[in-house]
Length: 141
Image 1 (cartoon, helix red, strand yellow):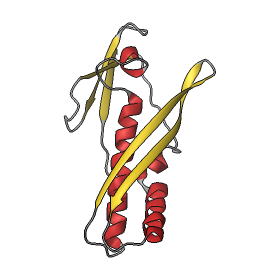
Image 2: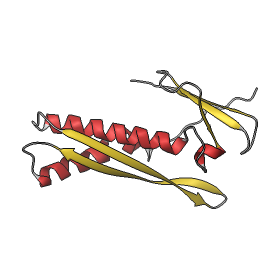
Image 3: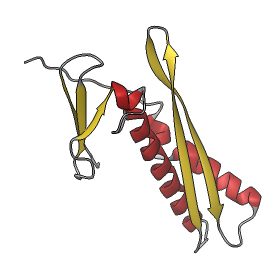
Image 4: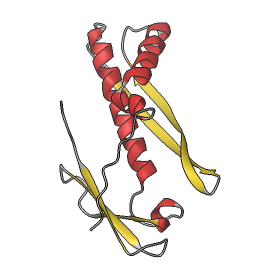
């Protein structure tokens, strides 16, 4: 089993305060996030942007591996993911991750490309995560 980690910190409470997010690899190191980066155009990141990056990269890698397994030796894939955050009662809900794929794979038919891409969409770990069990361990200092 592979386990990766990230951490978030929010200093103060409410929409006027700020947070930061860091990843185990260090690619994100105390990157700012808050109300202004999530619901406005503030500089920094937000959870939906990070989910979009994860989904686009996971799907594209899964498709690359599937195409190679199907015998294709060359190609280029580019995927954009748009994650939608919609109002849901008094709160919000991530309602969609829309993937847009552009691919160049010499010698593949449109039908085979579509079939392999659909399978990669259904089976990449992040696609599966979007319908996963969520657990929470809590402690209060």
